[in-house]
Image 1 (cartoon, helix red, strand yellow):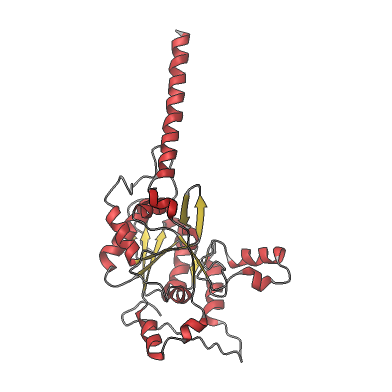
Image 2 (cartoon, helix red, strand yellow):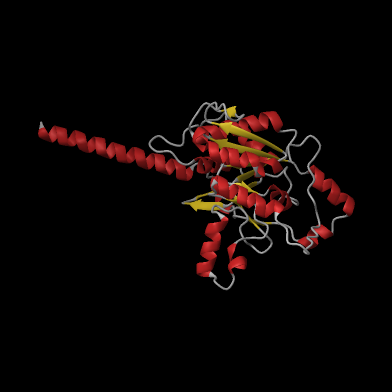
Length: 318
């Protein structure tokens, strides 16, 4: 009897280990075809000033009005103070912004996703955005309420990118064989990537609602898994000097690290001049960033930018 019980327990243990390995391998191999082995990760850079000066004045004016960015903010009731901060600050520079909440919140207007699962919220938000705005916007920016974004710098970075191509941009991270854009720095999808993702959302074999049988993977990794099936790969966004422009940390942390690692070049060693995002900010830090980015000016210094982004007619952008 003891030997039978022992054999049974061994069988259960071996079966559990086998299931775990199958699930893990499934995540590693999902979306991998022969083309995966030939794909090279790209580091996409922003245009430099000389490139912009080559564009005629009329073309620059047309470009400044034609770039429209739709912002997606995924929020939960516990984030209400952060929610208020992003609503009062940088999201006013989006051409359109919608807040997608896990449940109905009376304090702020939002679109109720009726789930606490971040991956399900992300899927539903992307579907809503594509169904409603696919003919109005070419670029879709998704972020957390802890993120501060400079939308004008995002538009500048995207200036020479064709939205009819499958772009999936931000701060890339490698996890095993999977390369994905970290949600902490914000995620940018072109309309073509949105179109491809939308076509997969109804195919659970390629883009499941759940990340796995035994454990779940994060929503940003799950997005990368789905997009790989559509031939869309994560690409790291950098300035013309090769510095990251989508940041997963706050400015304060970057400066602290620069003071330790580059004490003689704190400013140069910190961050890109054309940074698009910083993450991990408190509500107070959001307002400080808003002051520093949009309001503080040094008297006597004139910034002659080659291009100015004007809010299109009917835009929410202030």
